[in-house]
Amino acid sequence: MSERTNLQEENSRLWLWIGILVSFILGIVCMVLADSPSIPWPWAPIPKILEKLGSVLIVIAVVELAWEQLRHKSFVSELQHVLNRSDAPLQTGIELMGSSFHDDIPWAQLFEKSKNLDLIFSYAHTWRGMNETRIRTFVKEGGRIRLVLPDPSSAIAMNAYAARFGMSADLVKIKVDETIEWFTALRDSCPMKRGRAQAYKVELMVTTKATCWTAYIFDEHAVQGHYTHSDEKGNPPVFLCKKHGQLYKYLRHEFDLFINGKAKARKL
Image 1: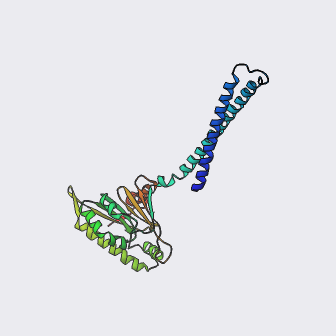
Image 2: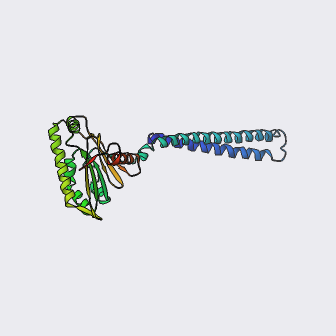
Image 3: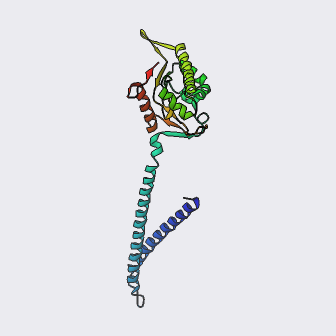
């Protein structure tokens, strides 16, 4: 609705309320005058006329007031209906939808405010290169990373990504192996002792499934990236969502399936 239309509607309601008020006041005045002492002829019929006129004016004011309230209630009900429908983005927890996976997401803040990071992607060379210092600092300062990658020994997975990215399966395998090698070196450089056993701050897993999106799940937020169906590089939307929203819960549920669900991934 335009600003001009809003102004016209406000003016109409203002004049309506003025009309109701004037009608009610005139009705009261007429009723008061109708109770005046007897008036000599030829003005004797005037009190009865004033009494009837006052009654009519008061009834008109009451009816107009009731109609305005009913109309307003209907408007509020419709407005509430619209607000309930527009509440969907709030329920999903989406805080940002960007067009640039690298420029629109506040990666520095996400790393600084988290202690855990769960990742699902194919190889993410560009993302890793852009955040290499942050990743190393994150792990060095006690952060935990769990990473799910496609299984480079699975021809099904390699062929699926090859078809998606428009490259050979051998090249996909090389890129995945490079990512595994990089995170393995990071894991081995930052072991974390827990009792007699030795745990690691970086856990690597591989799956034969080809995921439909990428996920970067931090403690309070998650980022979901998407693939394009074109052989050319595009700018598919990227979503930043907060914890407790529907999208965050969905990504968390999907990741948990790789940990101990039906889609359980193999640890490296």
